[in-house]
Each structure stands twice: as structure tokens, then as C-alpha cells.
Amino acid sequence: MSEAVDPRGRRVALKELRPTLVADPEARRRFGAVASMLESIDHPHVVRMIEHFDDDGRCVFVSELVGGGTLRQRVQAGVTPEVACALVLAVASGVERAARAGVLHRNLKPENVLLTTGVAKVADFGLTEIVSGDRTLATRDGTVLGAPAYMAPELVRSETPTRASDVYAMAAMLYELLAGRLPFPDEGDGLTTMARHVQEQPVDLVTVAPGVAPSVAGVTMRGLAAAAGDRYASADEFGTALADAAATAWGAGWLRQTGMTVTASEAVTERLRATRALEVPAVAETLAPPAAAAPAPTPAADLGATMAAPAVAPAPPPASVAAPPAAAPSPRRTGVAIAIAVAAVLVAGGLLGFLLTRSSGPSTTTIGPKTVNVDGATPWTDTGLVLKVGDDVSITASGTVHPNTADRSSYVATPDGVPNQPGIRQFNVVPGVDHSGLIGRVGADGSPFVVGHADHFKATVAGPLSLGINDRGLDNNDGAFTARVTVTRR
View 1 (cartoon, rainbow, N blue to C red):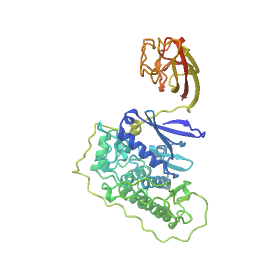
View 2: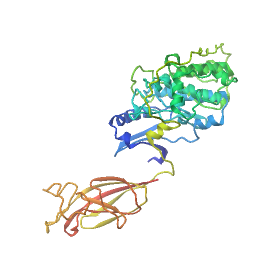
View 3: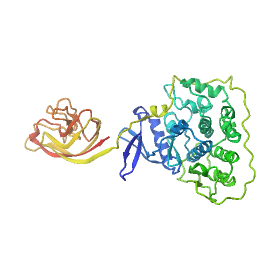
View 4: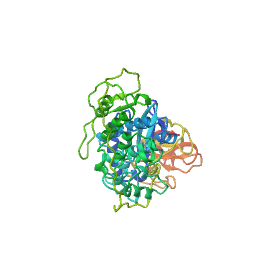
């Protein structure tokens, strides 16, 4: 990820697809489709996609810049069980909103949950889909995309992902927050970890962490069921069950006491109200309705209600709420054929490492666009711009340069060719440069390169940028090119 400042003066985050993906027409199509769906989502627990662009061989997401660290840092520091449940409720709310817009995450992990001022935001929706399409996490070269420690068994088997696949990852994160360890600890061998998701049942949470409330442990273990049909079917169902379980464990007001802000759907909000987790007004359901197969993007429908931590008058005593039953222990997941056609596994952020060109550093500075008049009878025109190594330079040009009427013995090559002789390349063009009217160089002794109608390049040497005409006999030309030069510096 790199940082930039947009035209409105906002600091934004940029994530760029690698050239190998940009060169894949199908991945590029999915990039546009996923980005358009994400731009329709405006939700407090989803990192907002501001815009995207696919231009000049680059595919870039532009999103809000979120400071404050990631959930991974909170895992390492340790949190109370109440805060753990509040964090996962927020994640579930964001995942539900994205799913109703047609986007599954498929790579949920603590590194993709960003934290700022008591609010959790989920990042990197749709990236796995751009790479692998709708059926598998295996790439063409056999590499598996995703974090093995949080990967649902059906994803390990390269089966079709569902909303329950994201539930599994959320349950794995909740298990880790509550127990201080993963359901299947990653010992550095991603393939072994993935196989354990398919072949084994995780140790019951109350055994690993006896202090965890049975009601919360039961929800967590059901979320980790091996068969997708035995889990909660959606993030909303998972969140509703977790809200009930937390109220059973800690009573009224538990969410207020965490200091977290959670914005939930109507279903989860009602459970929090009913169990006196906090007092919130009744609201209309505004999340898009669940879709069947291949959901289409929906307008930017939004939230149920926001639950913060203000002091409120106590509500009437709640009706008794039975703790959700713990998932019945299932036999070891043995005898299952593991269809893992892989040669390597990307772990601990490997998806983004594969998918995105990531960089960090100071904010981006844009110089220009600067307009430069390049006269047809001038050898080189100084643009007044001094490039540094690594600068991104974009040049566009328009205009016409042609031989004057006094001497037609020596032609100049132009972007559109000499009049009546299209594409002509006479003996007097700069050596080593193909026919094109506008050329450039960096430094007084730099090698000339073609600009033509437009060029975009990254400076590999430093020095003043000059533009010229692709002709040696410069005393017999009329006209000029108008060049517009923009330099982006990080």
C-alpha cells in the first residue's frame, strides 16, 4: 500500500495490481466488477473504496486511509473476552454488508482488520476473487491464495466459497482472541496447517481456555464446524448468535463497557436491545436483502443502528435467553481426500504480497501538468523540470511539424507522418529512434527516446528533461508541438 493526497486534499491509500494480473484480461475484468461493487458500500466497518482506475496499463484501488494499527496487534497484546466479542461483531457487520452487495471476502485474517478510535474496519474485500475467480483459491501456477490458519475446509479443497466460508474465518479469529492461540496453530508449514482444517476437529475452546464462557465458546465452535452446512449460514446469523451468547455470559451493558463502537444490522441490533447489551432506538432494516446465487451490486444501502458506549437508563429486565448449544464433537475429519493442487502457500499476508505492488513512504507529490511549446526548428527545448530517479513521468503531445515550403529536400517524421507520405522515415531522423515527431531525453548527454503522441515512464537517471523534434535538419521545419508533462514523485 502507498499513500497519496487526492485532488480534494484527502490522504488516501493506493493499492495497485501487479503487471502479471493487469495483463490477464479476465482478472482485469474482475477488477472492474469487484471495484464497482465495493464503491457502492458505505459502512462504518468496511474500509471505504473511493474510486478505482484502469488506465495506461495500471489497475489501482483508491480507498480511505485508516490509521491505528490492525487486529493482529491487538491479538498479540491480548484483549478481554468482551472486547474480543465486540471486535468480531464489528467484523461480522462489515462482512454481512459486503456479502449483500455481492462480495465475499475469502481471506479474512487479523491483518485485514484495521482499528481506529474504537472502530474496526475490514479491508481488502474482493482481492482473492480478482485473482482466482469464483471457484478456487488456487492460481494457475499452483499457488494457494489465502491465510492457511483461517481457511475454511471447503476452500482448502478448492470448492465454491460461500458466506459460511467467511464465518469460519471469523470464528477462527474469535478463537484466537479468546484463547491466545489458533484453532490449528501454524507451525510454518502452510500445507500441513491446511490439511489439519480438513482432517481434524479443533480442540474445544473451553478446554484450551477454561475461563471462556460456555455460551461464547459454543458459538465459536459452531462457527468452526468442518461442514459449511453445520455452521452459521451468514455473518448476520453468526453475529446474532454471538450477541446472545455475550449477553448470557456478561449480562446487560456488556457492550457499553468495552468502549467499542459497533454498527450492526437490524437482526443483531434487536438481539443487543433485547438482551440489554445497550439501549438503542428501533430502526428500519436498511441492509440490502440477501441474494441467491450471483448477487448483483446494490445501491449504497447502509446500517441498522450504531451502538456506542454512552450512559443510558436501564431497560426492563430481559427475558431469559438460553445459551446457544455448543457444537457436538464430531469424529476426526479423517478419510477426506485433500484436493490441494499446490506447489507453495502464501502465508501471513501472502495474498497481498502476490496480488499487489506494495510500498510505503512519504506522501506523493505531483508536479504539473506543465505545458511546454516545442518549436519545430529548435534542437532541444528545456521543460524546466529536473527529474529524480524513480519519478513517474507522463507526457502527452499535440500539434504538427512539417517541412517549410522553401526546402522540401529533407522531411521531418511526425506522429501522423509527413503530409501525403504517411509514416515516412527519412535519413535525417535521430539515430536509433523510430519515426515519431516528438522525442525526449534526460540530461544533456541522455539517449533520445520516442514520445510520439504520449509516453509514460519511470525515470532511471536524474537530470533535466528536454523535448525535441525527430529531425536533424531543423532549419527547414515549420510548426510546433504542445507537450503536457506531469511528474509524480514519492
